[in-house]
Amino acid sequence: MAYVISDDCIACGTCIDECPVGAISEGDKYSINPEVCADCGTCADACPTEAIHPAK
Ligand code: SF4
Image 1: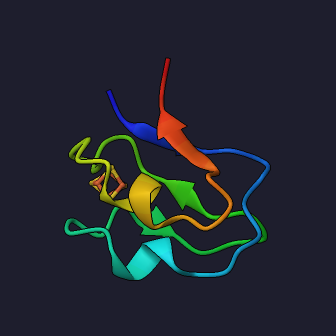
Image 2: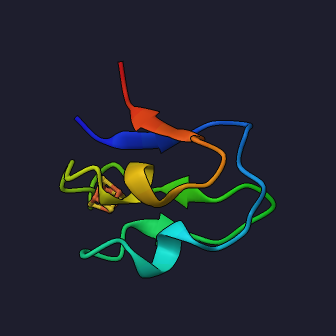
């Protein structure tokens, strides 16, 4: 399992500093590397647009 970032991402950069394992990459929409994500949920709590959710 990993968290994923949806199209609601506004590329604000809030989450990237919160991830303890450096799984988040910048872009037009930010993305999470599922191989690195530790499934902690910290980024989801930090996201102002609630764009980050656990993968189904
Ligand atoms: Fe990083 Fe945790 Fe978000 Fe995974 S769930 S991308 S480990 S902050």
